[in-house]
Amino acid sequence: MLQPRKTKYRKAMKGRSKGIDQKGATLAFGSFGLKSLETKWITASQIESARRAITRSFKRKGRVWVRIFPDKPITAKGAETPMGGGKGAVHYYVFPIKPGRILFEIEGIEEAVAKEAFKRASNKLPIRVQFVKREL
Image (cartoon, rainbow, N blue to C red; front, side, top):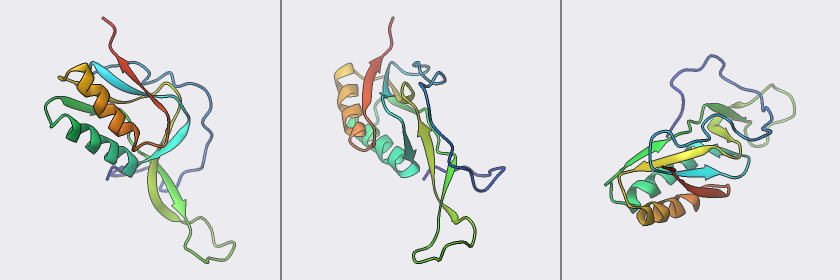
């Protein structure tokens, strides 16, 4: 699964996601993309399952770019742990999504196949997404 090799700080604060994403809002590599329409945390396992759904649907013909990387650690305390005792250990990693962010890009396949691939990937994600294509 996706996770950073090394981080400056082991545990991060929660933070807030507001507004529309300016970075990563346009297609940079492929012809077709999957764009987010909502704000949410996407886990490393959700990203990986969506990537697998995309590559399997077009039988490894084209190329896929994953434009997001989960580098925010989420902590959790053990079950039945009493109050106090500090912050829990790192449980998993997420990427905080804002509306307008391109999540995946595809190159080298037809538009109908790309739409089907992104439809399968969107079923794996916890947010509403939109199919976008490069304007010539």
